[in-house]
Amino acid sequence: KFPVFVSLSLIVLLGTFFGVAWSSYHQLGLSLINTIIYTVVFVSLILLISTWMMILLATHEKIKSRVIRLYCKWMLFNIYYYLAKWLSVITFQNKISTVESFLHFNNEIVLTNNTGIEKQNILVLLPHCLQNSECKIRITTEVNDCLECGKCDIAAIKRMVSNYQVQTAVATGGSLARKLIKDISPDVIVAVACHRDLSDGVRESWKYPVYALLNERPKGPCFDTIVSIKAIEFAIKKFLV
Image (cartoon, rainbow, N blue to C red; front, side, top):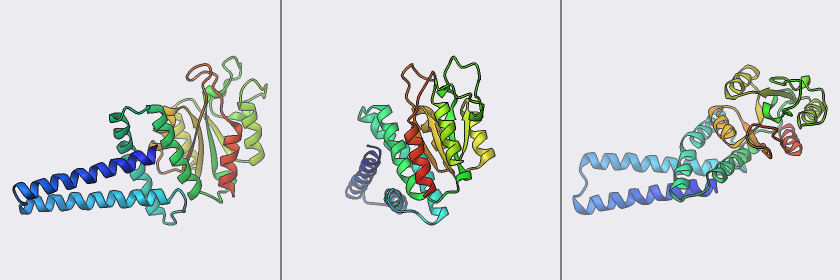
């Protein structure tokens, strides 16, 4: 859905441009200033379309240049995300499904462009709401504090990350998550959170490759949430290859 929305938005913008330019030319002709303006807009549209094609290619082929990779990520999170969001709003699409599609699309790019990562440079970032609400031990940053009672997914995650020897951290909010990322400075992040936190976090930490995994909320938001352990393990294996 997300790539389709972006592509359709670009088609709408390009069609609108040609329609306005053609109408202006036939009604009044184009002055020098108008010609310059239309030329700049046209070049900008061509740049938008070319960059989008490059981003689509990045879901299957690795972009070798770090500068181009960062440029494409910035454009994805700051331009194309809002184009897709705009089209989804005016077409009355479900907001959550649009966000999920955006996260899945970003995951494809992250997996394609980040392989052969050293295990110590992989960070598994978890929300505190994965912990059982009745647990007497409050895990706020470190999963090693978990006593492995088995009442929540933290115990299984602790064993898994220990097996792969990757870094892991628990964040109680967005501010702490950003601080942890800055302090650890990993090569790649496997982040677990809800729709809003992941969408915001992926875009705010755009310089880092973030593989986003949605948690499930059977008891409501931010309370005894769960996550697929196999999905986390899948991502770790892909990055280690």
